[in-house]
Image (cartoon, rainbow, N blue to C red):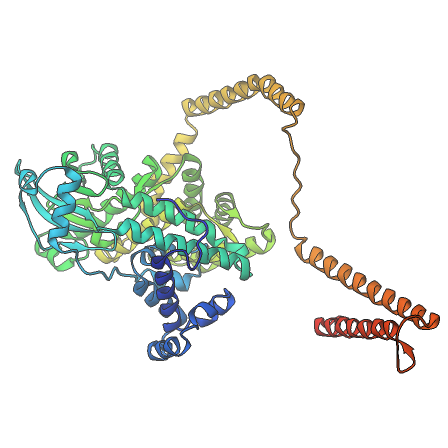
Length: 565
């Protein structure tokens, strides 16, 4: 799916209708101020009375702005719901209050009629449904904005679930992404905060994310990779993928019978060990992050089943996170500082992990980190919550215009969700204590002589390669200079206001010179007494004075309106 970078409001009937629908919903939930700031109000006020009535009817003054944003996104449909769900994992882009509100977003879409589902499956897999499945239940198990899930049984006898992508969803997403990109570009143009948060880049990243989610073969590959990485872990079960009935719009996965991790009564009745499940869940999450660097990024209770023998089974592998070795080590240092109450180590790790949107006030940042450490590090160990600390640090980063790479936010999300599950199972659960052995193992591995030699060898190999490339790079540069293909471009930043003021000043000076020239020329004409006369004075001289007077008055009014004499 390609993002359309520009969209005209009247390009196609479908786009225009969708744009009007979006505007109507924004008006309904009281966001006419946003439309005004984006210079879009006139598009939606052509039917002024109709839109005003809709706004008045739909206005909900007793709701907060964040609640109205969530409700508007839900009404705007699948693309905007997905955007909200992804933004709920990005506190570097939006406030923590809005993050918490967007976390409540739910897909509110009707199920696709079964004949359409049958048609998609048969078309995409190239065979009649009866040749592929002994049984295919018409009623869906789950319905979401991108696809819906049905239970089925393969001809070979395996019980499976089949996820089918909604028909026409790609076309809907294409139009919405184009409109979304246009709105983002207007935000960057007209809103001061748009220059800081770069909403067009957010939309581009969102488009890449949703493109991956639309491809079910990618989800299948991620599930298989996850299964291979943890094949020797007996406390984990990963559902099998059936490739012969899987394609980019249909995913077939083994059906697993289990108890949801949030169903505490059923777990107790089944004789499951709650404390053991909490410990295993934490160890699995930490192992994924610190050992494999590939982790399930959405382990909410609906995606975690408990099987007999206290085994844990993950579902839905559409959202997976990846963390490189350097980031894992820095995050481990932060956790080590958390466990051993070393605020300096936490501050250094946070600064090493974060990317600056603009140069931060380092002294103020370190002072704020120290305050957070005082709030969270000196409590009794049973009261320490990693999720609280992470939320406070993310809020701190946002205030100082610092951000983490997207996968690190997913990692923080996975850890806090697993901590919440652990606490629901075991009130004495403490994630930081479970993390200590993993942190120690990672630090020990970093000091392993073989690892050190490998790092030295890789660094030396890269250095030798760079030195060997220098002559060829120099020849290429000289060749381009000879061919006149080398250009030096200077880009100014932060001078826009200065340039604007200079242009305005030069325009006023030019205007004043023209007025002066008219006055001088008119005076010469009157002195020379040339041309036709009016009231005893030369007509051309009087006309020159009149034009000069009007221009002078115009110049004076513009100066007074600017507030600068």
